[in-house]
Image 1 (tube, protein in one colour):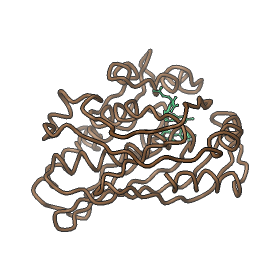
Image 2 (image 1 turned 90 degrees about the vertical axis):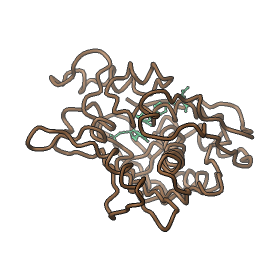
Image 3 (image 1 turned 120 degrees about the vertical axis):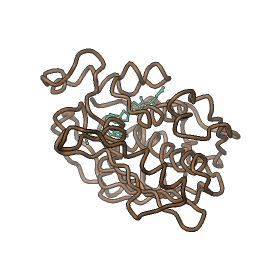
Length: 283
Ligand SMILES: Nc1nc(=O)c2c([nH]1)NC[C@@H]1CN(c3ccc(C(=O)N[C@@H](CCC(=O)O)C(=O)O)cc3)CN21
Ligand SMILES: O=c1ccn([C@H]2C[C@H](O)[C@@H](COP(=O)(O)O)O2)c(=O)[nH]1
C-alpha cells in the first residue's frame, strides 16, 4: 500500500501536465514506476484508502486468460470495465473492423491465446508458457505479450499492461509485468491485483512456489478530473494493513481456468478499508 500512496504523492508533487488527444482530458504524469508484490508471503496489494472492487479485477484477468473479445463476455463473469471502451469511444465506433455491439476486437487475451502467424495459423502463447513451467522449464522466454502493433487498428484500445514474463529460480516462480500507460486512481487498483493473482494462479497450476511479482510502469498518470479526489480525499486517509488472498486449491490447470473458475473462487481475508471513492473514467 505504501508504494501505491508514494506513487500517487509523487504524481501530485512532481507530475507534469500532458495533453491527451485520445480522451481529450489532460493528465498529470510521471515517467517510470517500479512496484513489487510479495506473493510468497501473501501480502495482497489491495488499496485500503478506498473500497476496492477486487472481484471485478479478478474477473477481468480471467477474461484475458480465456481470450475474451467482447464486453458482453466480461459482463457475464462480473466485470463491467470494457463496456465504455467497446461501445462509447468515437474512433472505435467509426472503425470498420468493429463487429457490432460489445466487440472489443483483437485485444489482450485474443493476442495471448490466439496470436496470428503470417501463414494464418494461430499461436497460444499462454498454453506454451504453462506447459513449459509445468515441466520445470524456463527457456528465458516464458513471455505472454498482448502487444501486437500490426493489429492495433483491429482493437478498441492498445493493451496497457501488455507483457508478462515468468521466470523460474529453483522451484520458485517470479513474474515481471510491463505496463505502458497507467490510470493510477482507477486502472492501477485493478492492475496491482492482476499481477499478484496472475503469479499466484500460475504458480498454483504449474506446481511451484510463488515468489515476487515485479510491476514496471512507463507512463503513470492522474486525469485532471480525478486530481482533487486523489489529493484532497484519498491521500488524506491512513492506510490499513494488507489483507490475504485465498484461492480455491481445486484450481489445478489451464483447462480449469477456461471452464469453471469464477471470481468467487478467490476470497480476500481481513480486508479493512475506507469508504468507496467514485473516480471519473475517461473513455
Ligand atoms: N481511462 C481508462 N482508465 C482505465 O483504468 C482503463 C481504461 N480507460 N480502459 C480500459 C480499462 C478498463 N479499466 C477500468 C474501467 C473501469 C473501472 C472502474 O470503474 N472501477 C470502479 C468500480 C468498478 C466496479 O464497481 O466493478 C472503481 O471504483 O474502481 C476500473 C478499471 C481499466 N482500464
Ligand atoms: O489495465 C489497464 C487498462 C487501461 N488503463 C488506462 C491507462 C490510460 O489512462 C488508459 C488507456 O489510454 P491510452 O491512450 O491507450 O494510453 O487506460 C490502465 O491503467 N490499466
